[in-house]
Length: 215
Image (cartoon, rainbow, N blue to C red; front, side, top):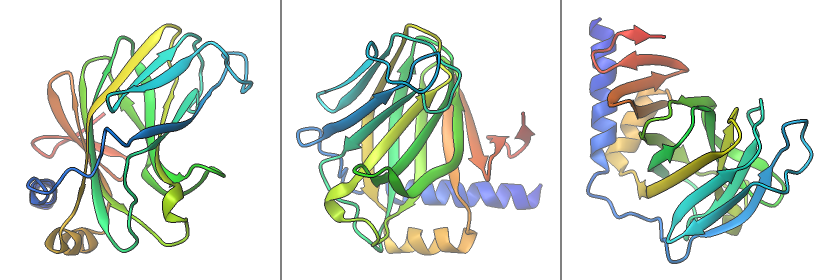
């Protein structure tokens, strides 16, 4: 239990360290550069579903349902470039009218789908209530041209008629002190709020706010 509580102390430290940092997400410059929607019968293009960026908010309309992780993919240029050697935190609110089977967050090259960073390694399961999502650290690398670095939202396992709104998007650069702490912990963590309850997911395992593992 002591080790688990220590882990949560580190998570809280990392999360709070960048509170005062500038939000690098520029809604006026953000662009939805590419979208992809698969049909319920296979991976052929779904010509009915759509996504749009309105005042920096991502609005997704899934007309067809599908049992698959890559049902919809939205490539978002956030209005700035992720610089090599720096760490960032991505934070946003998600609203939906249906149960979402999973949401995957990636950052990478929108031209050839070669993701240079994936957070987390697995899909994030979200309930149909409002969800607050935090991903950190996002570490940029030098193997992708700066102008191609974009955020990829992949939403899957959704029933027909699903509406998703991703808003209050915030991206901040993590300071040197936080970066050192992240290296020391050597793990990826995420914090989500589901049905009003705070959960921490570490290495694919979900814990409640007291540090107890939950299903």
